[in-house]
Image 1 (tube, one colour):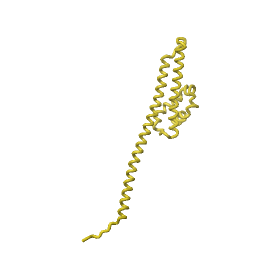
Image 2 (cartoon, helix red, strand yellow):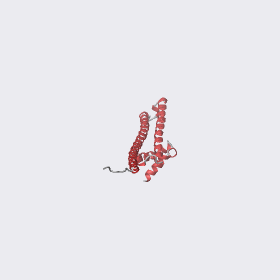
Image 3 (cartoon, one colour):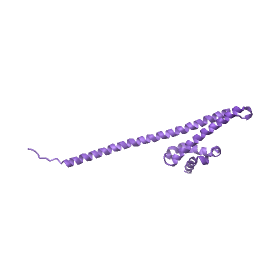
Image 4 (cartoon, one colour):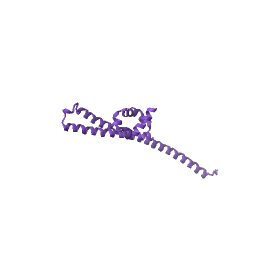
Length: 162
């Protein structure tokens, strides 16, 4: 009573190969999701680093401005030459710190305009900031903003048009 059953090894091999391929696709999709999440997390970290750096530069400029206002003379007759030189030096440091802040905003604006960073990630937080910077007379006069910070102006124009 032997059953003479013949196993079709080619069909079995094909079926096992198909199952292995399906399994490989699921593993690849799982890995793809992990990579995608990792890239997303990485972008969030880059955005946070950029914002930290911009805020650090603005804070430095603000601290210097506060020091200047605290010691600035209402009348230069009340201060010695050394004190006036100190105030002028602090003004120079303030201007350099504020230019650093503007440079970081201009770089960020350039990255947004080029599509490197998603516009919607920054628009809500920076739209009013850019508008306010551009409206300051110092931006055009002291910092030659129209020439030096073209990306800030382009992005502000784009955001204000919407």
